[in-house]
Image (cartoon, rainbow, N blue to C red; front, side, top):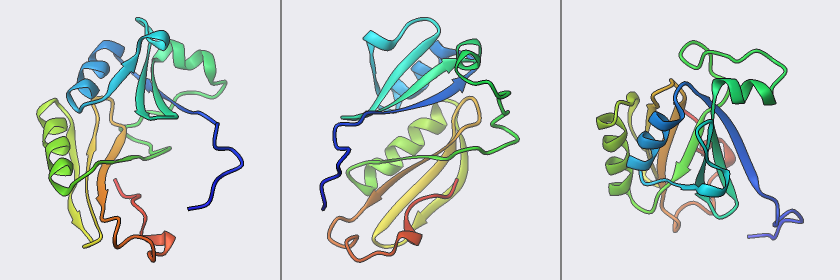
Length: 150
């Protein structure tokens, strides 16, 4: 693995949600935590990695950051969100938890041998994929087989 010249950069993805508290509860059930320094009644900072977070922003808060109109994620896809877990079993656990918490299945399980994934739509219609990749079999995979479907 090469070291990036930008290794210290942080990533914040801003995601509009209809109800911040409802979205926090949904993602907390999936095992995500929130940074209280950047969380209040209008926004929640969901930690997805050491240097990556998803900001769950209420619609009014999101509109303050974007000059363009907000798209309806139930009718338009602007991005797909994918996160990795440590095992195939955890893929199923997270996906089943998402469905039990009110999410909607997007696709059935995808098993590519070296990668296993499931996809769902969250409470606002945003597409998410949870996946596991076998580290012993991924070093020679072409980029076209990276997870992207929801």
